[in-house]
Image (cartoon, rainbow, N blue to C red):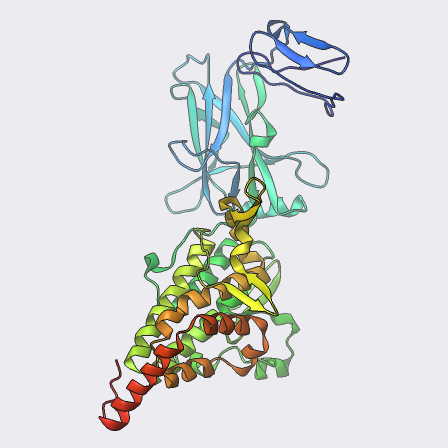
Length: 459
């Protein structure tokens, strides 16, 4: 039997192929001796007798997201700036330099690792000299690296959506040491950045530009991949190559802009993804489309109380959306739908069964997992987006609106929206939580003021 153990100090252990252990129980201890319990006997090993593969000059090398090297990372996306820190030892020469070369692991069809040339960036933004070495300062090197657009070509050569970066370093007689020391710490660079971090207008919500901003931010982060933004933001992405001359004139079967959108001069630019050109169709969106219609068409027709309600609802819709896609913490207050005695609860997505209490309980990890990468799952994103509507509309506050305000609100969406289950689900949740007594009183009050007192400033 052969057992390879990690020994004291900074060491590297290489295992050819794999290490398989057949045993009923397996215990390992760190300390004076290594201790393995196999099925037939107990095996002890003296760490001092194991072979150490400690490097002479290179102690460690790791990737970080910050210049101070506090936040270690193994994931990044094209467009980000990252930092690589090399810790050295036994280098006493004040002018010592380390030769280094960046590599993509297993790049290209041949299976060999691809060298990637790194150049300095001049003050005017142009590429400067090729960087082949760095000076050691207090036994360390900190090297900032912009993950530029050129890396996209390496991901295509790897026939995937990511590459893995490491450095080969040399000093004196120690050649081509790979850093980080283990491949699981190599930097995985994806074609796109799925992590949403930029909030709209410093969280000053309420403007319909919110949905265009979220669309633009998605397209910026997903420039090189094939991912499409949620239709909810700014509409479906239409492939331009499928248009005929007649289609271009008629804008296919669905005009890109609704009448109210044309009044605000919305710009709709074509984008190219993986060699194919697309154009968004805002008239097929939900967020941008109805924010525009509710703001420009519905708002002027509502009572003052209705306008205040709509302003708050518009703010909350955007706040809750970013609470999901950025903070990954949104849970619905009004979320229960009961049909034929079957209950559908949006918050069930975040519940885990607790065997000790024999009940389902909220689980933070499940909530975070649910919202992770939600933008690239259009159906899931739409479920989440519609789940925010009852909370934003707030049936308690909506109960203080008069019946004519409520009818105007309900009649504003296109008739086709009522053919979908999501709209009915919202309506059922709202209907279940509205206070009809308050609606009746508000309606009678409105009628009295308008037709008896001649006052239409319903507050």
